[in-house]
Image 1: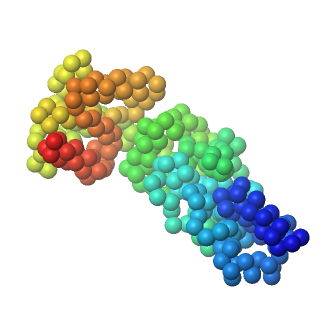
Image 2 (image 1 turned 30 degrees about the vertical axis):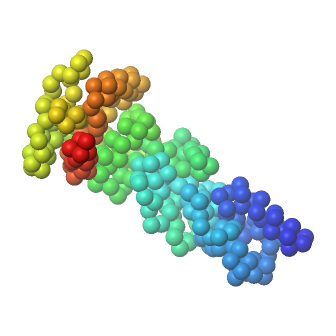
Image 3 (image 1 turned 180 degrees about the horizontal axis):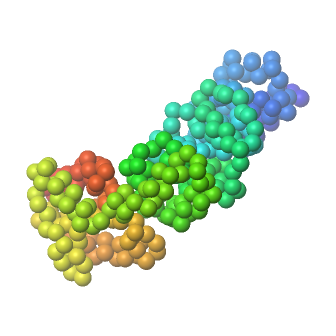
Length: 302
């Protein structure tokens, strides 16, 4: 096969795999050791992980690094733990090493990949998503429970529920299939802990008001009627409303519809609307405070 034809064959493979090819695929395209080394030296191929290369300039598209780890570890591998959380949006940034679980056999360690070896996996706990085999959101939360503290885990679970990625019943099912394993007790405690998962309205309101008071911001009206609705907090002059969401009362189609209707009514009345969760107010107050300060500052400038 001519050099041009071999390179075109490699490009066709890479196009289907986020610019990636393995050494076995390169060999099938006619590029063996010497030809491969020549293209690496010339900057046409770039090593990602041992046995996996990217074709072109070397800049990886989104999720290519994760796919490269799966290609390096073989067919029994799937993205798990912090990498699975990143793929699902439960973690904003990718972990320093791609985390992969490998079922039923050894996988040689590779720089940049953290391998978790497991004996078995229930097929219901992995899924094909964005062209990648990955832990389901419920299993990813179980995996995060192995290293997360309770507050951090509660936030991840709350975010997953708020984003409609996972339901408490799905997490309970994963726990039932993994009793006694590392992280199960911690996740079960969070799932059943009202303070961790379903922070009461009164507790969240007190925490929010303390946050506002300590920051010396204007005090809002609390639970005062506006049209047909009663917002949690309202700065009437600054035209700002803050509603404290809870997955228990805001999840599901009806909760989503009701919240949307309220927000439309508030905005029709000329108000900006913020919806931090109760968990955010209690466990991530700085994040909530920044949002409120920015909204009040926008109102002041206008």
